Length: 329
Image 1 (cartoon, one colour):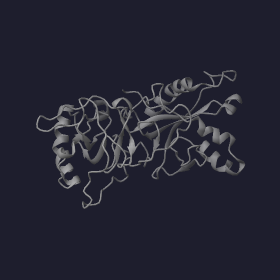
Image 2 (cartoon, one colour):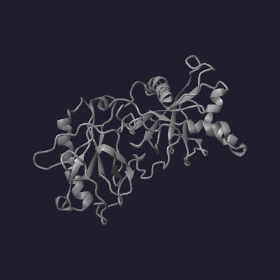
Image 3 (cartoon, one colour):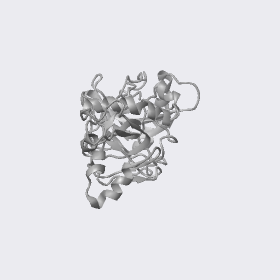
Image 4 (cartoon, rainbow, N blue to C red):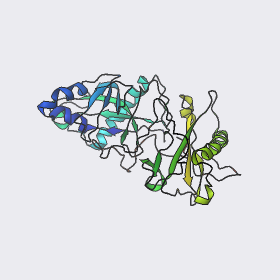
C-alpha cells in the first residue's frame, strides 16, 4: 500500500477564518505559515494552533502552498470530502516529495496532509491550500513529531514501552495504554546497517537474533510462552530501505490464532529493570492521539487511512521459535 495518508483538516482553516477577535492574531500567524514552518495545537478544534520551532513537538510541517483557482474557479461548489481528498492527492503528494528531495518513505511515519480553506472563504474566492507532513496514528489522528521531516529517520517505529492496539479487520491500531487490550508491546528498536536492501527473510533472521535477548532483558527473563506470549518484530519494505529507513521494532505479542492477532492486557516489562531509554528526538511515544478528528475526512471511505500505517505481509517465522505476524511498513 504505497499511497500516502491524506488528512483533510478543513476545521483548521475554519478557525482561522472565523475565530473570536481575541484569538485573531494567534490564528492568523498560523494561517500564514510558509514552507518549512511547523505548527502545533492541543485542542480538537485547533483553536490554539500556533507556529513552533520544528525541534519542538508539532503536528504539521508545511511543505508548500498551492492555489487551485484554475481548476476550481469562483463559481465552483465547495468540495465534499471525496473531492478534497482528490485535491489533496493531486496537489500535495508531489509537493511533499519535492520538499523531501525525492526521499519520502511511502510506508514511513510521515503522511501527506493538507490544510483546506473553509466554506466561507471558498465562497469569497479563496483557493489556497497548505500542504504538509504529519506523523499519524493508524486511525489518522496526528501524533507528536520532533525535528524537521527533512532530517529525521522516517522509519515507522515507536520507543520501548509503548503498547499498540488491535485495529479493525486484524490491522495494527493506535498507541494505547498498556493496561488496555493491545496487540503489541514495543520492547526496543533495531538499527539495520547501511548498504544494499536486505531481503525480508534476512531481516527476519537478524531481527529475531536481536529481539530475543532484548525481550529477555526487557522482561527480566520472564517465561513468555507460559503467559501465552512470544517475540515479534517488524521488517522494512524495499521502497522504505531505498530512502534510508533502517529502523524496526522488536515487540511482544500474544500467540496468534492462525493469521489473527490476539489482544492481551498489562505490561511484561520488568518493574525492577533499568529505566527505559527513548530516542533523541523521541520516536512516536504518545498513547493519547487526538481524541476527535479535525476536519473531514481523517479516514478513507473504508474507515482506514489510505497510507503508510497499514500492515502488510508478515515476515517468515523462525523454525526454532514462533513469531507473531510482523509488519513490513
